[in-house]
Amino acid sequence: MRNKILAASIAALVAPAAFGGTITTATDINMSGGMTAGYFYSTNTGSSNEDEYQVSDFIVELSADAANGVGFVGAFGTMAAITVLDGGVGNSPYANDFQYGWLTVAPAEGVTIEAGKLATNVGYEVAPSYGNPHATIAALWGGQPVYYPGVRLNYEASGMGFYVEANNDTLDTADTAWAAGVAGEAAMLDYSLSFYSYNGYKQLVDVIVSTEVAGMPVAANFDYHKLENAPTAGADDTAYGVALYVTPTISGIEVPVRVEFLNDGTSGVYGVDSATTFTITPTYRYTENSFVRAELSYVSSDNAIFKDENGVAEDTKTSFAVQAGFTF
Image (cartoon, rainbow, N blue to C red; front, side, top):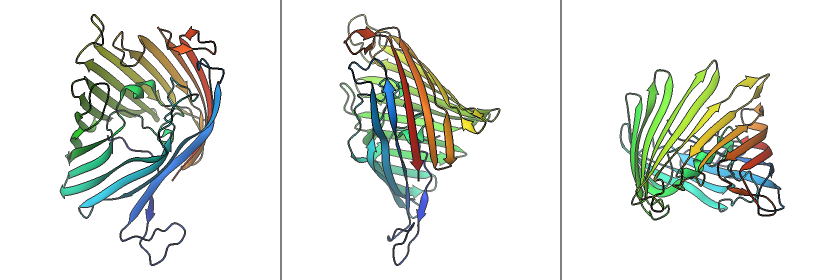
């Protein structure tokens, strides 16, 4: 199961002139993306500012299938990338510009090669919040790669997908990385397994499984990190985290719930010795392409990773958000 931004595509038809819903080009162009905006409140922000109004995302993605041998994906816009750890107050949004994109070459049936600024296959959630069941992104996401320049070879056969890639993702002392993975379905479970290596810094094993139980989407994302060298003598060199997801529907209202457990000891991978997060996000969908949602989240850490307005260290954070979204 590859990570994809969960947005509906609108086919752009070739025509002699452009009208509403039509783009005049030499070939068919697909357009997708979305916009979200809302109000975010959070405690223990390290300042007297505890709330913000934010445009969480505005992304326009254009693409063309590689049916004739070559295709492309390109996206521009802005992403606030709000995590449950920052609560939407004082976070640093991505730049308002080109976000990701790549050319796809299909040299043979079942084989594609992607080159450009790739979107990682690692992780259950994606950077644009309209592609996730929650207004904030999981804390687990902070230890995962996102977008980076590189090249990826994909192969699909017998209902399974395989990939291998080399890239210039940078983290700590690493300025190159490589990854490989497999995805498929077994025993009514969709699964993906990725191995991601930051050369000279650390290795990451990422496992995702998802299914439906009694009509409810259920998923789990597990990460294990292994540093090549501990940050200091005697410090831990491993970390792990798991995020669990379930989305019941009650009286027409979706109620996504996310629970996370993180533990990095003294490795510094997540910045917590150990922590638990809980997020619940009742969501009302007007249509398949529009929604409003409220969110309540809570973070509890064994070490005091937050600060109150007076700079006093705290070990909990409570956040609330109201967000509207539209995808196209």
